[in-house]
Image 1 (cartoon, helix red, strand yellow):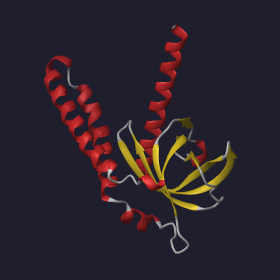
Image 2 (cartoon, rainbow, N blue to C red):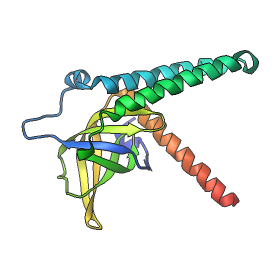
Image 3 (cartoon, rainbow, N blue to C red):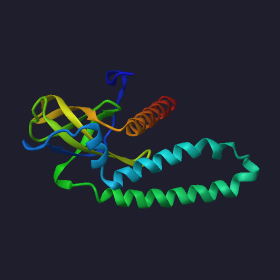
Image 4 (cartoon, one colour):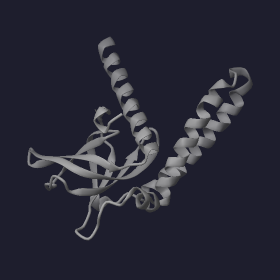
Length: 188
C-alpha cells in the first residue's frame, strides 16, 4: 500500500516538531533504527506485546478466565501508567504543537510561524489510544496561512512499520469514536 492510500482523521494529538538544522540530515534507515530513544522503543514493544496476546486472552472462556482477565487488565493498566509517565518525560513544551489531522502517512498541525515546503522535521507523536508514542521524521509538504496562523502538512519519511500500524489503529479508534458520537446525536 502506498503512503497516499492511508486515510487521516480530525483529532488533536500532542506532538513535538523540531526543524532539522543546516548541519543535520534525515538519517538512513539503519541510523534511524539506532537513533530512536529507548522510551519510544519500549512503547512500541509494549504495543506489539498487547496485540499479540489480545486474541489469546479473548479465547479464554468467560467463566474460567474472569479472575485472570481482571488481573491481566489491572497489570496492563499499571504498565500503561508507568509508560505514560516515562513518555511524558520525552515531551518538550518549547516545540509542542497539536495536530488537526493525523493518519499513517501524514499529519497536519497549526503553528504560529510558517514552515517551508520541503523542510525536514523530527517528530514525536504522543497517542492516548492506544497509549503509545512515536518517534519519526517528516517533510513539510504544505503550509497555508489560516486566521493569522499556519496550517502545516507533514508527510512521514522515516517511520517504523510497527508505528505505522499503531497510527492506523489510533486513526480507526478516532473514527469509531466519531461514528458513535454521531449515532448518539442522531438518537437524541
